[in-house]
Length: 239
Image 1 (tube, helix red, strand yellow):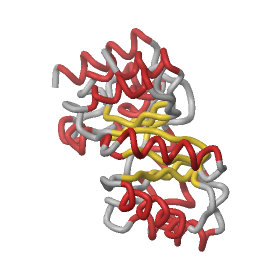
Image 2: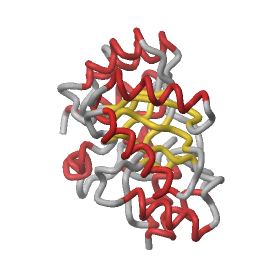
Image 3: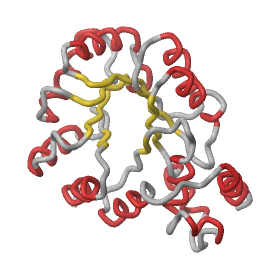
Image 4: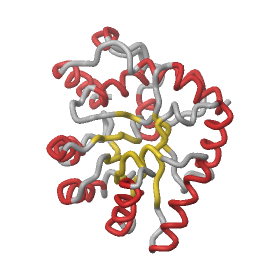
C-alpha cells in the first residue's frame, strides 16, 4: 500500500516526500521503499533534525543518510526551531560539501510559527515549512510575506486542518462556482493554498492511493483567482 502511494505520487507528476526522525520510523520506511522502487534519485527527499545538542544532532543528521539510502538529501530542515543556530551552521557546511541541496526551518504549531520570520529575515535559508489552510490563515499576515520578501520557498503542512475541514463539509457538495477548478473537497482545499503566490508546495499526508490520486489532481488545471479565493473563504467561514 505505501509503495503504491509513492508510485502514484511520482506517476502523477509529484516528487516531494517529506519525512522526519520523529515520524515513527518513517525515514527508514521511506528510504527502503524508494530504494526498492528504484526512485531514490527521482523523488525530492525532505527530512528534518530535531535533537538538541551538538553531538546528538550530528548523529541524527548522519543517520538520516543511512536510513534514506543516499549520500545527498534534497532538503534538510531544523524541526520546530530546535537548536536553530547550531543546526543551521552545520547544515550550511554540509550544503557546501554537496550533502544537502537545500536547507530550511519548520514549525507545525500555528500559534508558534511566527518565530520562523526572524530566521528567514536574518539567516540564509532556502525553505520554510509551516501550517496554512483555508481555516488557519494567520500565515498570510506574517510568514508568507516574509518568505516572498526574502526569496524563501514555502512548504505547507496541515492543509486539511488535521481533518477538521473534511468534517465540516461532510455530506456537502462543493459550491457550484468551485466546480470550474476542483472536483473534490480535497482539491478545493489544496487549490486554495496553491493559489497563494508565496506558496511553493503543499504536503498533504496520506497512506491511501486513491487519496493520492485526488491530491495530485490539485496540481492540474487552473487555480482560483483572487475573487474566487474570497468566495471560498466566505463559504467555509459560514459553515
